[in-house]
Image (cartoon, rainbow, N blue to C red; front, side):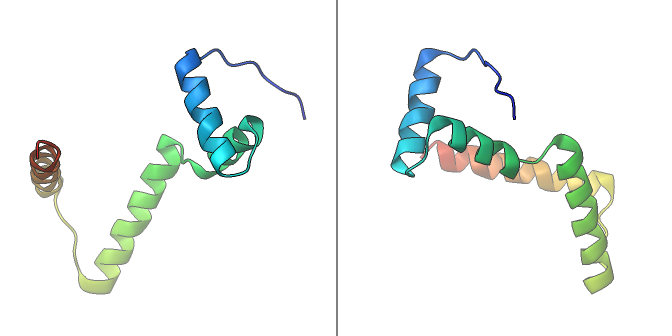
Length: 85
């Protein structure tokens, strides 16, 4: 396996190193594990489609795009409200 150099701000590197150390890992191992667990945008979209298909099959729930946007807006509003507290 070859290594790669990634340039990030020193503060970000130090924060990641501290998180890794708290989990008993090297920064290299922590970043490798992080890369394995995060989803790409395409993977997230595929999972969302799978979830929508499962909901539709389970209980017939199939929101329109407009309904999804309304729900997303409401969630954003509530998250902003909670963050302001």
